[in-house]
Image (cartoon, rainbow, N blue to C red):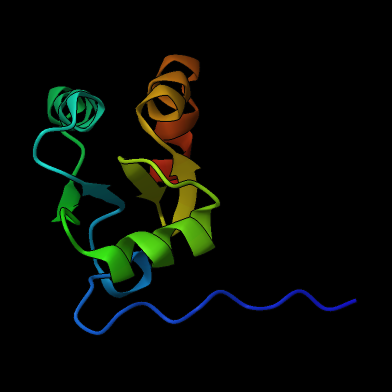
Length: 104
């Protein structure tokens, strides 16, 4: 049985594969976990792009489709969905985040 491919992103939404920065975060302004994820990336000096999806239902639907998650932040490293802040922090603690960023 063939799996359906994810829906196309809404027009104008920056998507990880189209950006040069290795980390993309989809956030909302009032999200504490979003601020924590941004703080971790700033503290490590990791280049990233923040995309505000507040009120953008099409973007949130697309994120749910490609990541399987409906919450923010949604974080992508080198185009791969890694989850939210908790998963990002674990990747950082384990050293896997650095390995992912250093990979070609």
